[in-house]
Image (cartoon, rainbow, N blue to C red; front, side, top):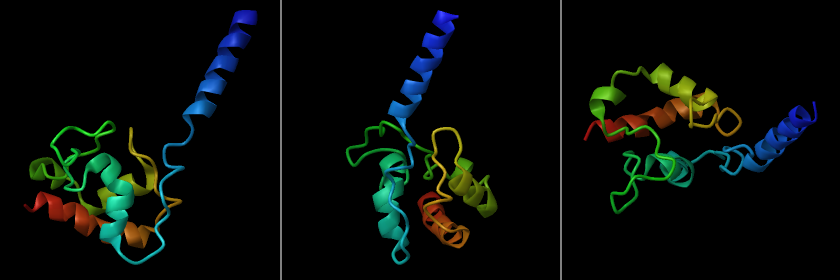
Length: 116
């Protein structure tokens, strides 16, 4: 019983310390979506959409590689909107950061990476 209680307390404290990965992401205030990509999305997806830093090294929390057009183009725009709003695996949910309409507009930036 005591060991179970200690395990529960440990897990609860670890969860509190880990926090919400989306908490420190800025909220989109309208305006320049490319700037928002650079401020929020490039942390994991890179400025070029490939999940790498400017030196070509994988980012610590590398996200989906949008430059892989074979994989990127398998998804419909509605899929990208859903994943962005609800999150998936390491991808945090942006439902409290962006509107669905703004995310739909952001898909054009995502698609731009796979068109190169």
